[in-house]
Image 1: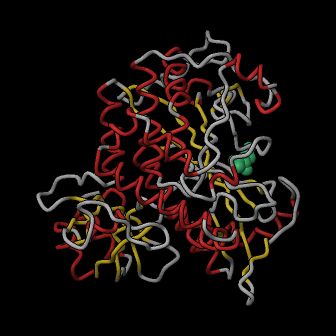
Image 2 (image 1 turned 90 degrees about the vertical axis):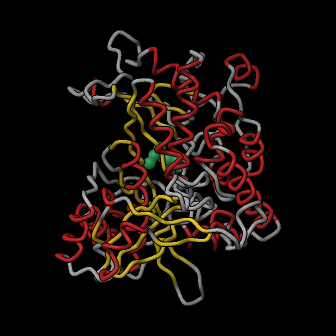
Image 3 (image 1 turned 135 degrees about the vertical axis):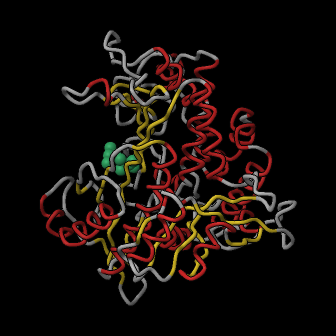
Length: 450
Ligand code: GLU
Ligand code: MG
């Protein structure tokens, strides 16, 4: 979409306010808004933002990061291609914004620019990445005491839960469709009040933008139904957690051939696909700090909860960190894909996808191989069997994942100095803040912000 088309579309929809949104280092979606009368100008100039916002954690505690204090300005510059009219807010529209420096360059601490850079690196190798983010979320009814009750206690995939959620789900799906987000399927999930809505795959940048629209839409539509939709990784410690599994495939740059597909292989995965997957597994300890980044994420990542807990892979193995998904009948070539289970919706999707691409490209460059597949739940192997197979328990806390990220030179180089040091400072401060508090504090803040 061109800038002129954005202005025409905004006027046609009687839009008054246009949100320029970004996702920050804490995974929180924030932004500033332009009035329709200033839209033409603001599309050119962006809206000013203090550099300090990338040093702010999810509790709005500003961290001491050099060069990210009270002095300095960047510009939130919207991408016209991401324009959507918001079906859940009166006379409102939104665009995803890049953070540009005053000399119009991508700012080093801009997560969306980081993903664009990784997409560019993939293109240099002849690859274009497609991704679909598959979210689970909890539909909760708030009460006056400040507690939340799940809207259903139905069984996994049960029609009782479909009934409980039918009206809000229909509104959520209609709202996503009106923003051009294609829905693939819908299922009530195992946890109480837990529902899952997989969307269709899209090029990586669009998939990350769609993830922001998805989070916003689910929460806003639920709000209009008097409900709170939480995409926190583990909103109820005794219930199944919310994953945001990342399905991805690697195509040629023309987008014609899915390069993950090889009909001759026993799991229909190409040699390049094995290398790419091996890169993701090799970097998984540090990558987790980007894909499952919050304090609450590690309550979800436990053995035997179908979220994965080990650096294992396997065909249709839902306890493995990477599942080689079986293709769909009659569409085997186009649907060959890999699925990262160790990922949840508290992540910043630009950082998660960018990190995954950096890790995978490293695997391809170094021709890494992933070892033998896990054909059972890797948590059921003995310690000796896991050691023989090179399967390791990955970091079990946010702090340990951040330590692994700090030691991962490939991921640090990919992120660059501004993003990596601000990210580590922000996320470490979250660890300290939540570790010092009660469980209720952690749950409250994650339930409400994601
Ligand atoms: N809720 C599980 C998770 O935490 C995923 C269940 C499934 O869809 O396999 O990721
Ligand atoms: Mg699921």
